[in-house]
Image (cartoon, rainbow over all chains, first blue to last red):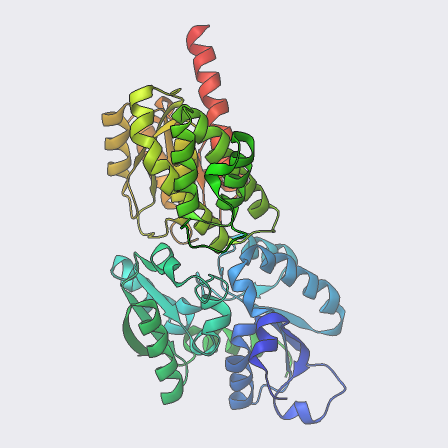
Length: 226
Length: 235
């Protein structure tokens, strides 16, 4: 199945299997991963790389990054709807701006989630990210997905396409854009560099790979019957 | 508005007071800073008290903007443009308000907490509080506990406002409140907190007096607390 970034941003993704099992539809996977649409490419890549054919992936709209109060109820709704079809469910979100509400929801539902404050942190590795401390409080981050969807996540919602004069109101205290790269793509790096230029920020590319996402998913994959 | 604008453009100075104030509400809604500045100057020339212009033209207009933001009709960019327009009007009125005297509601020290550089919400609250007659001491962004406390004492403030956008920085509000408690100063101030990831439960858990969902709620909450404080003092 080809993943469409615009659909992942606005609509998310209905539960589907993406490894070798994708060619043999029918039985659902034994583990359902409920993720942010912004992680769909990385999670399907990990499923393929590791042969986790017992995993199905469902995504909530990635644009909820900008309205995180919708995430916990969205996860709960998907869990209720699909709980009976899977042996286990894993929530591939970190706190992601929910202020602890997603953690409370997951605990109440008895499902595990990814450790950490947000995807920037777990892609780089929560320990490494935390070690930056105050030195990066004026840093704006992009991931592969956000670099591809920069217009949809940053420019249009902030009205910078219509009102570039608002740049200082949003980014006046920022100094640097760090592109946390999950893959080696010169084209994406160039997009991220141009994003930094557009926001008037210094640019840095930092390769992270899949970071703690890979570890968290490996743990979830091992906990469900293959 | 320049003279060579299209024929159907409104000439603000030709509107009567009531029409002009309503037009200023529209212009605030549309984020038209120059028109707001022009409207303020026209009303001043007509002998309006600065405080009346502030409340009836600017604050009332911004309240409409705030309500529509709360109801999902307007979004952050439009609110920022409206706030920028209001700032233009307030810049004219502020020195005049100081001269002519305006009701003083109380004094608030406000800032974004340590580790956080986001100040859009904090700036909106500061502006609306100022519009409602509160004196504001804005400490800016990335504010450590000692700066809040030093400013509260120096300014003999009534209220402390803390803002955070990040879930990683909002726990710092508790650090500030705990420090106030340790120093025996917590009950000297009304502590209001706000920011996208916060809620009432969090505010209660950290020992704040109130969580304020938006700038309008912050103003109303601050007014209520100040009223209670005055009632207690005069009882």
